[in-house]
Every structure is written in structure tokens, then in C-alpha cells.
Amino acid sequence: AIHFHSLRREKPMVSLNCGALPENLLESELFGHMRGSFTGADSNKKGLLEVAEKGTIFLDEIAEMSAVMQVKLLRVLQERKFRRVGGLEELTADIRVVAATNQDLTRAVAEGRFREDLFYRINVIPIALPPLRDRREDIPLLAEHFLTKYAEQMGKAITSVSHDALELLVQHDWPGNIRELENAIERAVALEATPAILVESLPATIRGDVVRPGVVPTETLPDAGFDLEAHVQGIERGYIAEALKRADGVQVKAAELLGMSFRSFRYYVKKYNLR
Picture 1 (cartoon, helix red, strand yellow):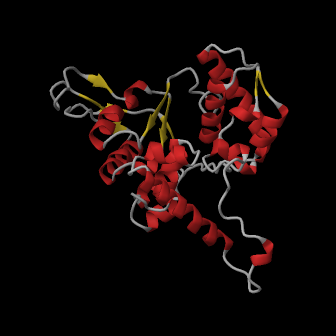
Picture 2: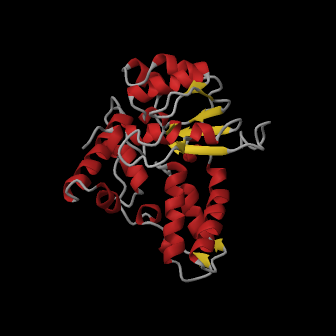
């Protein structure tokens, strides 16, 4: 939306997930490389900084960048210049950079995991996107969008979400936010045999078939009260750790045991520092 409503809308818009690639490949994707600069570099290649010239580059999960890559990105933002891997020529970078993260960068800076100078360089116009549970009015629109997308991809004549199924979607807290919702709709489209998504096609965690941990009955609430958030997080961590143990450390299988998307599960693994 930022790109297509800007003066750069006629120029390229490219994106890169900084957490999806190891450092050497991330550097090549971002800056490009020269032939022979490393094993497998059979020809010169433009990086996304070149491809996005006069346009926009979106850096997702920027907090996953290594310290070395943070330094190199900072130079680009400060000097608007860069070199391809293995190259000597200085190239200009007239681009808009949009960055996103699900981490608290202020805390990451304090803990030494993210460079303070880079944080202030990218924190020009911050946009805090509320979690999906705080904007439930968006859920029907997003569900319809993902339904149309996956029904077309799978060649299925599914045109709507049933009233009961939509109610469950709106009531769910979506710890994995929009990605979890997309995963749920994709699954439902794959399983559904009628023209509308029914409750039975939704994941068990949304249907309520799985007992949700962390609910403290009012009759057991101590007179002096207690830290509910810490209690819930303790239970969450226990279930995540147990799922990992049962799945022999395979995160995809562990996520399935908890009825979660892999993306959501990986978030909690990082949150609770589990391996």
C-alpha cells in the first residue's frame, strides 16, 4: 500500500525475508554478486537493491539479520551506495526501504542483538500493526480474500464461509496473526467438499476440540491474586516443549500436534528459547 500510493509506484517493488536465508546467500540476494566471487557464481547477478532502483524494497524479519549484514545494510542507508559481492564498482541505491519485524527492536538493541545506529536509521516512520485479535473486524475480509485465493489455486467451487465457521474465526485469538488465518483457510479449502467452508473443515484449535491451556477457574483464584500472564506463558512453554519432545525435535510435526501453523510454532520456539 505504501509503495502503490507513492511517487515510486511506477518503479519495482521487491521483497526479501531476512530470516529465510543464511548470511552468504542473503548478502548475494541483496547486493548481487560477480562471476567467480564464490562457488556456484557462474555469472554476474543483480541484487534486489539494483532491481528495486527508484522503487521500494521490503525487508521482512529484519531482526534476523546477522551483525555483519546489519553493518552492510547501514552503509547502504547512510551512503546510498553498495558493491556486489566480489565487485569493485560502487553502485548507487535510490530506493525506499520498508522493514518489518515481530520482535521488540528496542529490547533487541538493549540486549546487543540489533545495532542501535541501524535501529535509529530505519525507525523514521514506525507503524505499529496491532495483532489480529485486536482488529477482529478485519477477519471476515481476510478470510474471504484467502478463500478466493486458494479456491482458485485448487480449482474448487467454494464461494463462502458458513455463518458458524465465520463466528469461530472471529472469536479465535490468532496467536500467529494473519499467517495463521491464511494457513487455516488454506487447510479448510483443501478439505471442504461443499460450496461453503463448514466448521468441520477448520483446525481443531479453532473448532474448540482441543482443550485450551491456561484457563484458571474462578474458584481457584488465590485471594491475593496472581500473575496471569506469567502463568499462561508457563503453560504455553510447557506444551511447546512437550510437543517438541514427542516430535523428536521436528518442528513441523510438533506444530501439527498442537494444531498450529509452522510459522506460529516457530515464533513460540524463539519466544521461549526452546531448541
